[in-house]
Picture 1: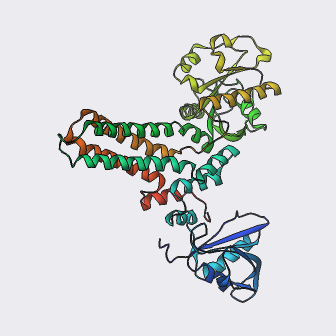
Picture 2: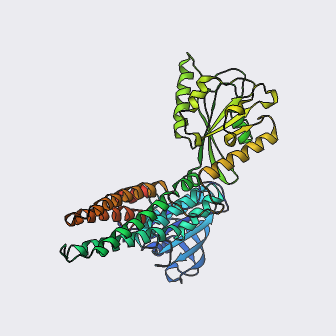
Picture 3: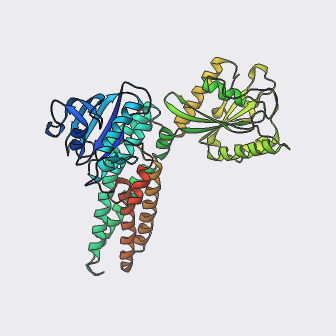
Length: 457
């Protein structure tokens, strides 16, 4: 991609009916292209920065295509740090498509996914953390997720990573300086300071890694599996949580044979609910496949709602199953207390057990609050979300952490000849942290990162 010579164009608004549609242009010929395809009292090439011109977009035959506003943004004070124009026309797919076609006819090329933000990064306006925050903000499913993304976009997370990066550079410089001294000349306190700095950096990385669960929940939503024996009320629970009839409820065992997935917001936290096939021994091939999918869903879930029937006794097989699952993942939902015959709570942990009837509205409200409190407690979600790491950041931080632990182990041996190997581990940590912020990057990394962006962003 030659960002120095290409001028790109894209439709920046959704392809549905709306008040306006926006076509964005960025690159050295953005103003010239706009001037070729528009008619206005003042030429775009002569407009002052950050001004709006009233204009008409004209077709190749000279006839008007649309009545528009031209937002003129001059380099470097634009989103991409390049010459930019936003053409704001009437809403709808046809108007936007016709304007886009004229931009391409006049010399622009179609933008790739995320290319506007990619250019903002390459031109130094954003680092990679901020670029990722743009995508997080677009995809935010809740106010909490939007606030988290906005703080990251404003540099809240970049500061923490830049401090680690700069500290690692300082650490490497001190290490390599020791190579210029003989073992007799090298003062032990100097080496102790190097070891102390390495430990301080590792502690900072560890604190950042602990924020991963918060970011995972707010960005992607908590994955919740609804499991249990047939006819205990799993599908009823899904429907009550969704406030709609999504799953078929039937007294016939084995009605749900495949997983059913839906999403909701619970007090601002996105939840991904999965209703699963009833767990039992069966000769039906289709139902057995559904039960196998249930087991896979359980392994991937952040929280498991195990629905029990208060009118039926607990069986040994189910209690043995519980022992195989992390207890902090389980929340027991004892249903049908309106026809209660057995006191299951005697065999269950009180702080992880809910009792009630899913046919009772007040009981369902209590259950929702119980789920919310369990998630916020388990994942340590703060009242005011702040910028926290993503899965990409976590993976790179873990690689950096591993390298620094190896360096720390070699430092403890206090063997001068191993200083070069210590430096190699520190260099590797620097590279991993640099990949997070974008101080170190490869074209493949950028392609992978921006491929998930929408075109026009």
